[in-house]
Length: 336
Ligand code: NAD
Image (tube, rainbow, N blue to C red; front, top):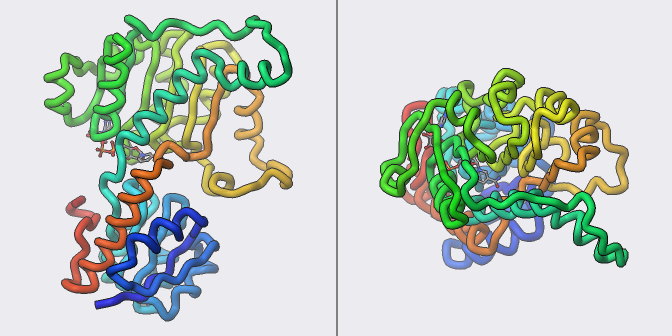
């Protein structure tokens, strides 16, 4: 059965890839630039499903509005579902589907891009060379060879990131609530967080955002790390307590910080705000440090990932239309 789907937070590239994936399925996709919020939920009034992204709001209030409009399916075009009130969705009879794996390689490779750029100051060097400034002062990095890398969360992305670091001849240690046998087979040892914090030269975050991982990197954790540590976060912003890392950066208690995600990114990322006054003072402070490098949630952003996201999303909508069950559902009890 063909479905009418209201696609929130649409960017031009979403439309390109979803249209290509939808060519045979022929669902009616209604593209909206607006994010899904309490005020915009009404825009889905004649649809049967909504398609949403990472910074759309899917709290109880929004879900109640969608349910009142007879929306039966929320098709997330992302893997993370920390922004969805799953209990409310279940109680309201709304199925939540996601894209469990679109390209763990994309995120893992971007993690390394951040580490290498920040370590070797590529972003600064590029600007200098463009201005005919060939001075090397301030561009000193360190060899990755034989450094210890601590990976927190060794699921799909963490495991690939770990393997890439091993390719640089790094010693990789890891922490996960469920150790990955593939990583153990590659010689990666699992350690407790204290050991990981104490031994790592680079700490890379790849765990989901849960009540247990919120502010996992806080003042107490930073106090247990090497003062030269490089922290890289491509998971979810709130795994890091941003104010605590800013304090540590000011005191020289962190060597370097690379972020693709930020706690309050919902009001910033995925938009051109270059003509606006930046009202987020915490983010503004982060931008002042010479040893901080930030990208705006683009780790997933490759051709392969966008193709997989679109195809899996259309697949979820099609299976729901045909059977009443989406292929990759998330609910309070199970994650498929
Ligand atoms: P995954 O589910 O395959 O792996 C997550 C791993 O984290 C699992 O091994 C799990 O056991 C572990 N984990 C859970 N709780 C933990 C805890 N308290 N401490 C340590 N480990 C814990 O997920 P994935 O596909 O590898 O993605 C990881 C995260 O990356 C996602 O949750 C998402 O937030 C983020 N992500 C970011 C982007 C981006 O563009 N920046 C894109 C995709 C995913």
